[in-house]
Image (cartoon, rainbow, N blue to C red; front, side, top):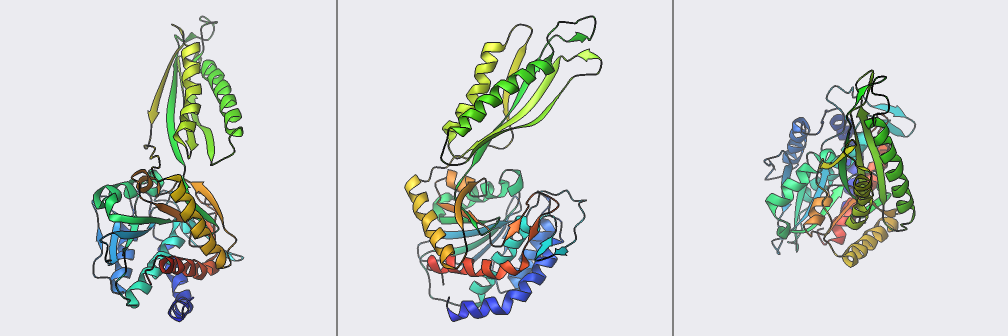
Length: 379
């Protein structure tokens, strides 16, 4: 760690925690990130940023410094949280943690990113190969809406690398998990619970399908020893009171880092429907939700930069490991942009009211992030 970096981290450690306290208490449900974006924009302008703007969907974009190549390394964190606007926000100090909805996912990493940008703005350097662009995305929690819009508008060809800072810095995600979601409808004639006894019941038929399909999926996932693969029944509904149910519906999701594995799990549903449908038991399977953005970055490239970042973080004394997850990296990687996600703090229990962060870990996160800048020849 060079002296300028060490001095900056030491001097800004307390300021980062005050910024975290302030930003964590600004509500930011997906699609309602305006106040957080305003706070971040003011922070960057006060730090000396010459250009800060919001794009057509609400992302905050701040080009910190151009490079010789005309390409940019994008450093991003997301502004939104999963919590509704009416969720009470207060920071409770419990041991070495601060507990507050959204504080770990993804407020802490956003704060560290802001201070890394401040370091760049305050420390002039010679022109570098690639430019540095800060991106605070909206809508990460609802299908990476902001990352998709930014990539399409900015152009994948203009990005040398894309970072998404999200989660815990002990987990490094050089590759992504995607999901496909399906609604499974069952329709039957229905009828009076007594008078039409014996007529197929849509709820019962759906239960049979789920039992069969889940059993096949569970065996299939257990047989795979690479990547991350999962399935889930999200919701089940149907029936109307004192009747034989004439309609029932389930929502299922299938996740993997490989599209062919999702295709296999979905095929179990389709095979069941084909073999068990009759004139009185009619199945319909339809996709819904956000699109799966399957990665097109070569496996060899992913392995190389995954190991490179893992060694860097471990060299800084962090017990880190490689994993896979669904992050804002999905769409850039779908467009062929090498991308990586990791957290900038010790954060725990995301998407729960127990969401928490170890505030004392933010200086270490800033050390890691500035080391990533240095590894990329940016400082």
